[in-house]
Image (tube, rainbow, N blue to C red):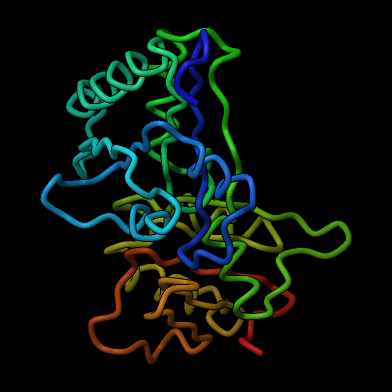
Length: 243
């Protein structure tokens, strides 16, 4: 709490969306924080992370940091640096600062880039990361979908824009594949799975643990308008059906 000789910074994974899937440590850190940092793609938009944590934030200040949905790191670097500097200033004043992120803070998260910047501004002992349940772990649980048994290998792969040859290669090599960042590539991914005879061994999961959660192993009949945002596809050659 404020008044310590040195403050501290905590990156906290909140899990996939259900507040009950937050860790007890995450809840405690949010309640103890002097300031809570919330990443947003647009300052005018809503934040699911803030919505999840709001009951535990109380009246403490919330620092909203903008990180636009862009792919060019040169354009994003100033946003990461600006957020890191604001955080570092508070930590230097002796504050406990908590950075909220969906899922796990070190798995395909904006937090990773902010962390890189903070390491240039704060001593290592002041920086801490707290894990959260990933979207694909939550999806596997929701679908009763075993991710791996015995010596089976698991690959977690972000779907690239354009050519899906790298995805094909991973699907050929591994027993279980988690496809993340499906986004607008969803139709192409489904076609690839069908071509490889794997569409019957996969589960599509969207907004897991949230009110709009959707799960299906029938990839050919997704509801109209269903897309890959906040979605994952789990592929396992040994199984793949929603129980």
